[in-house]
Length: 572
Image 1 (cartoon, rainbow, N blue to C red):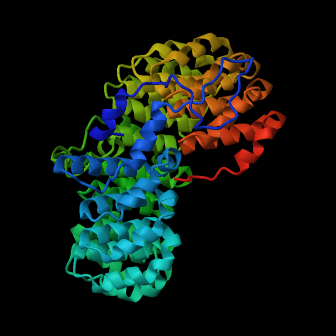
Image 2 (image 1 turned 120 degrees about the vertical axis):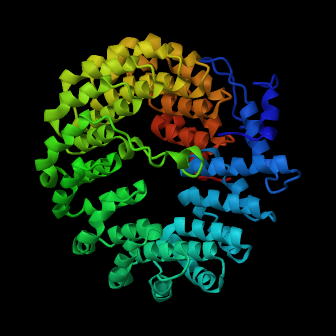
Image 3 (image 1 turned 45 degrees about the horizontal axis):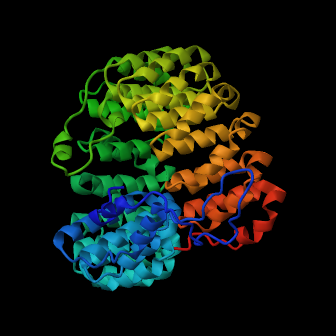
């Protein structure tokens, strides 16, 4: 995550304090098996406390406020898992009540993006419905993302929908009511289908699509919205959500949307039609359309339809493997910052064909898919590797996959590692140790994780894996420890070295050390006391890893089981 300046200022903290502190527990004792693990507060612990102590809502200057807003955006994008692991949810929830509308709205949006973890502060979000339009819209959006759990606030959202004169707030409230399944509000939502504001009308379409009983009745009106370009995407999405019977009934109305100028609308139409086998003929006819974006959508639609419905079009899809065209019609929006660039499968027919052949499990085209690994475009290579993963174990093709391990683009090398791991290609594992010295840390990590997928092969490279524990990147060191833990008896020889990492500054490394020791049997259980100290770590991710490790350690961990059982999940 991009950290604001007030976090960067504390990077000068010493890595390890010279004086032991009693912060993690009072059970730290000298152990003959291992140099004493000092009970200390690392700079990461201090960093975590510092973050929690920041008054995020107190914007003392515009520059600082902008940094805080960016931090909130970033933690929201990091999602539920990071919120659970790193324990900053309380700080974000506190910021949702900030008097500054910009800060409060950013915090509320972040809570919504944090899923179930964010829903623990649902009451804070609901209180914001009565604030300014910007804050109320963010609160309504987040309640909708919480799903049916937010049904208790149906009346509040309904009231907001009725009283608000701001189209953005009204649309957010309508969308939220649809997501929480508020059938009681359906009549009012239906009345807004013909709103003069496109955003409100579109939200009403999508909400009714999530309310089956009312949506079925309003389907004819929703179909009429397909004629309006500004809300066509919302209408197609709504019809898709209403199920196969509605899509089949209005298939002739939805089919032209596969040729829409907007890539999102085309994809939504493809997803909708993919649940109706009868749509195969219409999609197949578009494989030779003059627009490369349309050809992409047609291929994806057929791939989603499955082998039984689209088998007669497999060769036509494969013919797109020689299609070098690219749809750049929406590039101006990406360049101007209006939206992200469409994914390769919506722009490049070759990528779409590879994805479709993978979904259809077309083994007879495996060699053609492998040939795509020699393409000059890294996007095509990535699509080919994804397709090969879906085809399953085809031993003769692993040689071609191994060539991707030497690609100039690091993303291709990462994907090649993931592909070998998915296929459990043991005969190709001897190529992975060479990547332990790759210039990209994500490649080193992927190579270690791929090797861990084949423990028997990994045992032959324990020394090389052990060297990776000195890597400068925590994620690589963590992957190295978990790879050693996968080696069974061979990995047990490294238990003491792994235990030394329990006091590492990097939270990911501490968590991985706990997890690895939990998998090393009696050799890992010998460090049960040291692992138990991590139950009092400042970071929830480390706490949970320690708890699970102790549960696996059996009798050695019994003296500390009470501490493990009393540990609360996400107590920040």
